[in-house]
Image 1 (tube, one colour):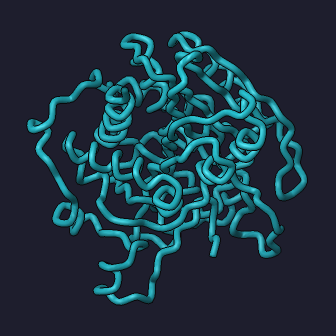
Image 2 (cartoon, rainbow, N blue to C red):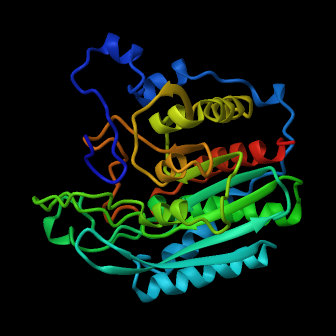
Length: 340
């Protein structure tokens, strides 16, 4: 059952005992510290440079300052230019994939996937990706008069891009031998809003990643694995092992969660299975561009399975937490910098 953009299949009618056994169950914040495997950071020698959460925070703020980054808007154009300039500044070989993509309601979007390539001649490649557009409808707003307005998307959109820009900055200062491709996917968040009763059949979410997966920037592109970052900046975030991630990239999922634990971030990366989420990694996995893992904040404290500010106007800079950015950014960087 697909409810929203990033649908979670939580089993609401299962007893608490079965929830502990079910792969789709999630812990509350209270039980998280008890059930998470946590290894003191002093027992592991970190190899990657220090991830600067202040820098990532500023990259997020810069995006939000443009306003909602809805395709076909001036803010979208300006923010896209900014992302291209930053990746270029940080030493990436930058490509733009532009396409006209149709929405569920027949609108033609001037979509723009932005790709930064490091070590283009390296055969071994890691794909890091996030979406940079924002939701054109605040369809989870309690104030119904505001539901048709676009959101700022500090967490949903901005946070993943901010973390990846900081990783790009570090790759420029501290190069690695492995190839790294950073992609900012467009048109992820234009799925049909929940307030519309007549649902249009089709795959209307993640249009940019669907287009790229079918038409990669390099013919027959393959990466050894991929990591998607989506909603990775919220306070008290919990990252469960998402269903498609386990299905297509179980070994990489385990690698990431174990690394987070070694670095001391086990309270964020919960050692439990979560639900299946429709997101940018689905097409990337299904079309075999890279076995990919989705690091995404989920919660069992809301009816839709995400934070209470999800797809509302409260998704602004007030929800961004530097400690969460640090946990995610350092973990992903350690994965990259320990790759041989």
